[in-house]
Length: 319
Image 1 (cartoon, one colour):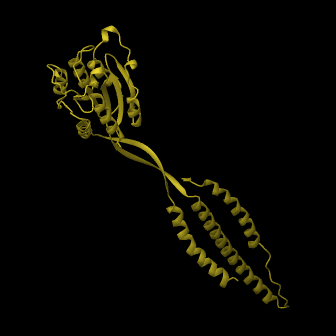
Image 2 (tube, one colour):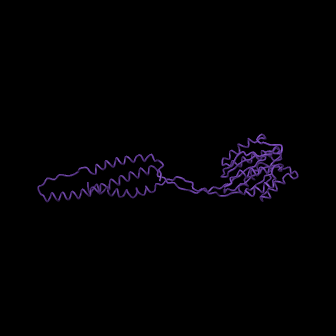
Image 3 (tube, one colour):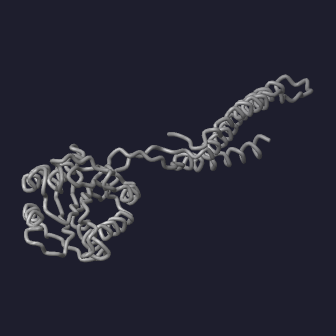
C-alpha cells in the first residue's frame, strides 16, 4: 500500500501528543473525600469506588482508543491510499516499412499531380491518421537511404520526405539504376528479429529493378523472413516489361499489384493495405496506481458505532 499524498502522514505525530494529553486525563486524580465515623460504611464506599474506578478506567481506555483510531484512519484516508495493479494492455498494430523509389522518373505526370507528389501526398495522409502501427521509411535509387526507423512518431515520416534529394544517396558507377531488390533486403533488416508483430513492406516504385540483387530472389528472401510485400506500381505508361518485376512480387506474396492513378486512389490503396494486416499484441506487467480507500472506509464504518456507544456510556453512566 502506498499513499499519493504521503506528506499528510506527518500529521501522525499530533496523534502521539493527543495520546499523551489523554493519558493525563485518564490518570488524573478524581477521588472524592467522605467524612464519617462508620467503619463499615467507609469500607463499603471504598470498595464501590474502587470497582467503579476500574470500570470507568476501562471505558476511558476504550473510548480514547477508538477516538485515536478514527483520527488515525481519517488522516490515512485523506492521504489517498493506493495500490499497484498489474494490467494486461492489448494493442492492435503492425510494423510497416515504406520503400520509396526516388529516381528521376518519379517526376513524370502520368499520375496526377506527378508520380512523386502523388506518393508523397498519400504517405502524408496515411501517417497522419491515429494508429498503433510503427512505421519506418527507406528511400532508394541504386543504393538505399534509411530515413526513419520504425517509430510511433509518424510525423517524422512526413518531415523526412522533404529531405529526399539525389545528394542523399552514395551511388557508385556500378549502382546506376534502380535497386529494388536491395531495397527489399534493407527493409527486412529494419524489422526487430524478436517481435510478434506482423511485418509488412509497402513498395512504391515506377519501374524495373535494374541493378543490385535479383528482385525475385529478394522477394523470396523477404517471404522467408515472414514479411509481406505490397507492391504499388507508380506508372501509367504501360511500357513493355516495365512492371514484370512487380507482377512477380505480387505473385510471390499472393497480393494484387496496386496501380494508383491519382493521389486519392493511392490513399485508398494504403488504407486497404492497413486493414489487411492487423494483429493483437499483449503487453504484460504494466503497473498502474489506483486509489484503494475501501479498507479504511470499512474500518471507520466499524469503529464509529462502537465509539458512539462508548461515548453514551461514558457520559450518562460514569459522568
